[in-house]
Amino acid sequence: MDAVTLPDYPIEVAFPDLRPYAAGNGGIPYVYTYDSGVPGPHVMVNALTHGNEVCGAIVVADLLGLGIRPRRGRLTLAFANVEAYRRFDPANPDAARFVDQDLNRVWTAPILDDAARDSSELRRARQLRPVLDTVDLLLDLHSMHERCAPLSVCGPLDKGIALARRLGMPAWIVSDEGHPEGRRMRDYAGFGDPDSAKNALLVECGQHWETAAVDVARAVTARFLMLHGIVEADDLPAAWRQGAPAPTRVVRVTEPVVASSMDFRFAGNYTGLETFQDAGSVIGWRGGEAVRTPYPDCVLVMPSLRQLRPGVTVVRLGRLLD
Image 1 (cartoon, rainbow, N blue to C red):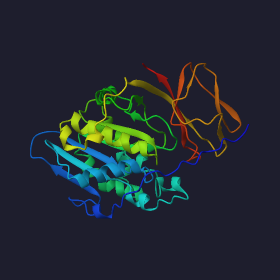
Image 2: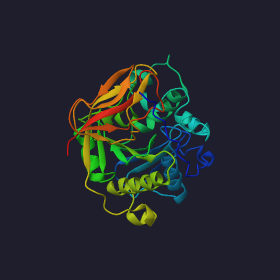
Image 3: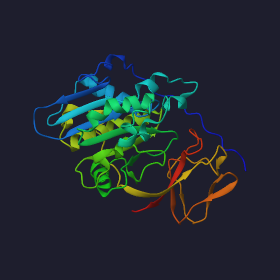
Image 4: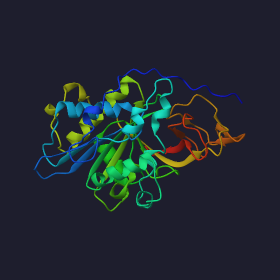
């Protein structure tokens, strides 16, 4: 059983200086909310849930620099984990994902309300929570450890799949329950309630530092804002408005593969969306035991060992719905 070498991806993009945005405009650092005065939804575009996922930060900084204002409803533009972002080191780029804990695993009331719990990420989540409580539609911009086709993560509910289909890009849609470690921002409160009109998408735009991820983030943001009437096409640069996307494909995640120790290896250099025709195909080893696909045409969703530790999901397994 040979160890799989993790590729070193080049850093192709410049990291924006976020210091000019530190004050915010409503008392929350790095958060800006604009009200059109016209009835409409409150839409939020969020960046830097993870500190090394720079494409969203570039897009939010672009929107602020362009002076974008909503035509109707409200628009919130946010940089989430700036503390982790500040720690980015090209020599160890994966270390800036978070400071103390994953900001995208804390979004439940018992955790947020527990005064005995403290971390850099919990303090930031508690700052962001009052804004999120008023948001109707959230676009959370992310990127991936490995170079993979972009995908939209829509949660387990039909309303999430429907929103991803209406958006129309990326072409790959992943419907899932989240992670055993904790709840994501996109599943927080009404976003994860089937009876609520609130909705959210988490979009994985590409590999963390590739130029193409920024292009995807801009195109997805433009479509999301136009879909909900927040802006019109001419409000945004023409380069942001890409043509019609390919037909969507939905993958329903059935189960996570969670590392029980540091002894986990994949059977190949997987980067995501690999599909195994036969049930029982070996995809890796956990503690020396083979990990096999549980059904035919099993899809690997975001495999990565870059954050390997006990309890971390290293890949999720999914069925193609269409």
